[in-house]
Length: 388
Image (cartoon, rainbow, N blue to C red; front, top):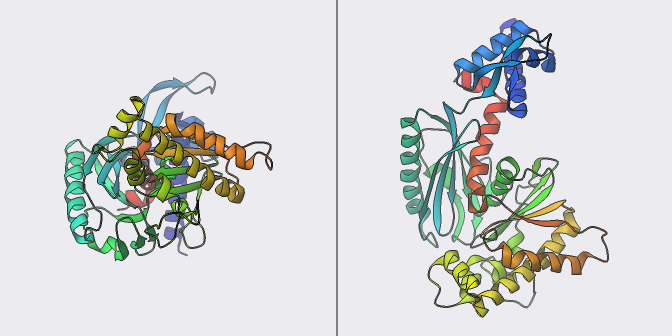
């Protein structure tokens, strides 16, 4: 390794170290950064200058840094220039979120679309138009979108961006990434995994929890010590296909009695009332009015969730269970039933049953987690952006 290559590698590590500390601490002076990182003050000053020039950090004012009372300039992550985009394909909508480097959501777009059994090419064409319009809007506001992640409700080959199976879309072995043309680097990932990461970075931020995202399908993402658990093949978290009742109704996955057949959005709406045409908003209206069918549908869904989650708890022992997606607005009607079912099924074996909480993010979690992945990548390797 030549001296120049060693110097570049050392600079890259130091840039990541400095930006990581600034991001973790919220704000910090250059003098404090030198003390925290063990780097020379002149080195820190040069690194901070490079990060400022790249638009990754800003100096926001004079503060006391505690060193002999001398004032220092406060350094913060900048949200003015660099941003990421999170995209989502779901069964009944497409979504895009632009998030700047300070993790502020700058643009929100959700487009209702019925993607059931639609061809991947047709869906991608609409999504591409949505993504490009959002990027144009971001550029007009002075932001540079440096990357994106696409969330899909199915099993994904992370290396190739191929969707192996998305039963609720009717897709198998779709090379999704090769169909989408964007002016920024893009990856494809599972919606439930990204929703869990969204909850970690933008929600309550528990270090250990199981996030359940309810939509047409039901997925889960497991966070262990602040990291996403994917399993050997990256397919962990298919909670919707945990069998609740072996003799239950057939599921799109080929099984019978899966959780989705009791607690998925379509099943909930159908069980609540055949007249409901306004989606979850209509169901909430019926629940507020005390509609018996709607209340019974939520009771049944809460019980099924509790049964499936009791198996998950026995297997992975999460500290907390967070209910997101459609379960967030429905939490007042299903949260108690889930907790009671868990307690009844787990109480004899466990002193403490995991608490059940509602997500603050609802259906936004996956797009925020998608954008958050890009932000994490920039913070972990700012040199890649500076050298681009």
